[in-house]
Amino acid sequence: MNTNNHIAECLNRVKAALQHGDASGVAEALGKVDLDDLLSPDTIDDVRARREHVVCIFLFTLAVDEGAFPSRAKTLLACYQSILAGTVDTRIATLPRFNVRAMSVSALAGKKPLRPEEVKKATGDDQAWQDSVELCLDFNDWPSAVSLLEAMPRRRSAGFWRSMATSLLTRQKVYRNTKLYQDSARFARLYEICIRQACAAGDSKLAKILKPLQVSALERAGRFNEAIQLIQSTRPSQRSFGENYSLSRLLCKRGDLELSLAELDVTLTSLLDGDGGERGSDAAQDPVIVKTPEEGVRSFSARSALALIDLAKLFHDAEQKIFLVSGTLLGFMREGRLMAHDKDIDVGVIGWEKQFEIFKLLRNSSLFSLSARDLHGHETHLLPVHHRPTGVAIDIFLYREQFDKLVTGVEFVFGHRQRFAFSPFALTATKFMGVDLYVPDDSGRNLEENFGNWRVPDKGYISHLESPSTLAPGGLDFMITARLHTIDALKSKNMTKLRRLLEIFARWAHMPCAPSPALLERLDRQSRSFERGASVQRLAAAPAMMSAANA
Image (cartoon, rainbow, N blue to C red; front, side, top):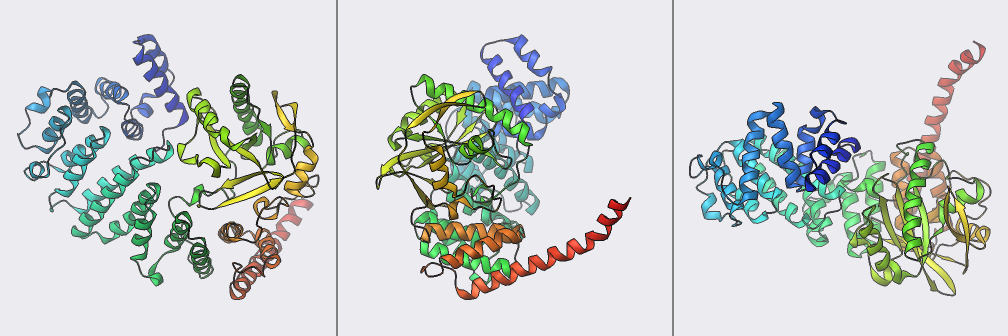
């Protein structure tokens, strides 16, 4: 459930216009979208999950006027108006005394959570019960939502619990996408109840589907031990690839890097054995996993210029200096533009203690989104930021003086960290993509320490594993990164990358956390298998290519 950018922009304009009583602004915003899209269930669910109550009332009213799901829109409109007014609307008051929807609206309007003994008397059809839970979530009344789910009549079908679980998931996705993690532990509790109720309804398949969602919610709440125990309740021989991967990530986040490495080797083995399932609900967020940009380089460059302009202006006004680093500096020096495979912007700031000032600066601007969870005090090396208007990702690396070097690093979503040390440098003013900012005064040396022979493109280069600036190469954090890259190479059947990784493992084979010879042998065989498959494909394609050339 992700509202597209066009609809999201319209809703933002509607919200602003409603706040200022600007009727013409509302009309202008509506004139630029298809009302069917605006009033779609996905859009309305998204707005409800974001708890934008005024916009919800506007959409329900519009739905009634336009004849879109009129009966349901009228019901939701009456519920919302009652709750926000603090007085139960007549359309709700006329329902039977113990109707679950009436009881829930009354409790929310009076700001008094439902008591478990009250809920036991409640009656109503499936839609009324689901509406009641959703309304409690919309208005942040988690105790009432728990009471409702706990007291749900046993006769509810497996289909009802699937619908209820889908509703929870749509809300959790919104919170995840907006980085609102504070409700994660509560979601875990609701999933736990749904799993128990689904089992009681005879739907063990749904219970199995919901278990990873409960694990994910516990992980986001920082309750790693509970999430680990939940996965370990399944026998090792019966765990899926995704469960093994999630377990290794949770162990890493808990600080058990050696156990995490061991579990990653189990994950690799399961993948080699043919379990190619998904890595888990959050695996796609791991920054070591290489993805293809969704839009072309030209489009990305244009959006990046806008993001850089906004970022540079903020820092300039705050009298802070930002400078190009890593891949963005490489593009500037070698090509005079962003490189074709770039997916984000890399900039640096000297001084780890500036993170709090930067955080406040960006959050107050409303142009950028970032999470307070990425503030780790002296341990902070990187602030991941998104430019709201364009969606461009920006990595702000924090450098500090250490070991007579300038040290920065990456805190991976997986839970580990790698650090990189560079020769001290001063800053030189420059212009890039029309933006005034800075670069290291000896950019060539800086790039050499980061990429080695940076002047010659190397598409197979793995910066987190091959950079001369890497601190503790071959150590635990290094080897976790290498395992994650190996998983990615196997899943994408990338023979070239896998061969490169095998070379890296061979270089550090003497380290205690290196893969076992048996695992390396299996990876080597898999690499050769990829190579044979590629050769067969080339041979099969040769006649067609010759025919095309002769045509």
